[in-house]
Length: 121
Image (cartoon, rainbow, N blue to C red):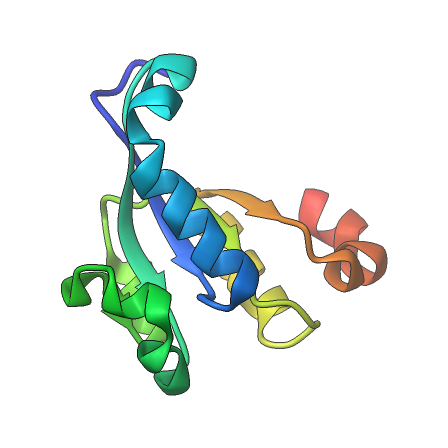
């Protein structure tokens, strides 16, 4: 990948999402060295109640949106990391990311078990 940076869009800021965000920020130099360019957190799709979490208070408020349309309109996102869990709305978000030409990362076992073949098509 010949880019100056890779934009990451994070969907979810629960326990796992908060740790993903923390690693992206706290280990930015190590990750950039390993990947070959910086991984930059561009947007975080959250539920309104996630904004009160300690992780959210440590981050730039401009990163957050509760609106999926705003999240997917961010042109600097190259990779969508889905850590919402459950089937819905995670499946719809993954489909939207893939149809928009984004790379996706998920550990969502339910979505992969039920819809993995469809997502890989």
